[in-house]
Structure formats: C-alpha cells, structure tokens
Length: 151
Image (tube, rainbow, N blue to C red; front, side):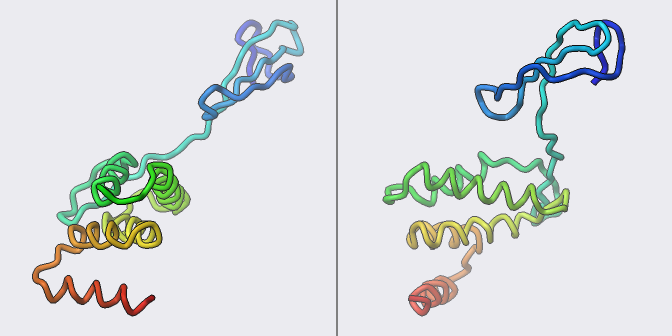
C-alpha cells in the first residue's frame, strides 16, 4: 500500500476492525519510511450481474425483486421473513458464485421454487403458477400431482 504522505510502497498494519455492517475491514497502517499513520478500507469486489429476461432484455440483478416475489407468494402463510431472507441470500450466493455475468431469469425462477418448496407448498404453488404461467387447469393440476407424488 502506497503511503499518501511520502509515496513509500511498504507499510505495516497496526490495527484491523470490521465495519459496523460487516461489509468491509478498516485497517490502520503505518508507513515504514516516514512512520505516519493512515487508514485503508478493504472490501470484496463483486462484479455486476445481468438478468436476461424472456424477451432477451437485460436488467441488473436485484435481490430485493426476488424477495418481493417470495413475500408475495407467502402472503398469509406461516413463513418467517428470516427464512425468506436466508433463501434469497442463498440464491444470491449461487448467482454470485457462478462464473457467468449474465443469468437467465428462468434459472432464478427455478432457484426460487427450489427454496420455496420446503418452506411452504402453498407458496411454492402460488409462485409456480405465476412463474410457469399455467395456461389452463390441467397444467396447474399436473404441478399439484407432482407435489403429491413426491410425498
């Protein structure tokens, strides 16, 4: 780390602390040449991810949009916000860990359904009915039959 006072390239870390929100680390450093102290912040760099929609348009990945969809599916159901937040965090982690910078919205929908199914089957069916755009009662019944067969 280059000293902001004298430009010397070497410094030592005197103190390290996590930030209040745990997204960065604050480091106090001391220049090995002029002995002056300065502060640096270390954060994880995340690359932006684009979601490719059905019409091939692209928009930035937004975890809040996923959470809103899951909350809507879980309306009046016994699913805690903590469980939904954990599911969204898991989905976000999977998306970030994939080495692709573009992810199809269908993949995100599948990840959401995988997380909703063990949380609440009614919420799962609600989400699936919107996500899969059931055309008629037969396609809806087919999905319900699949759930019943898995039990």
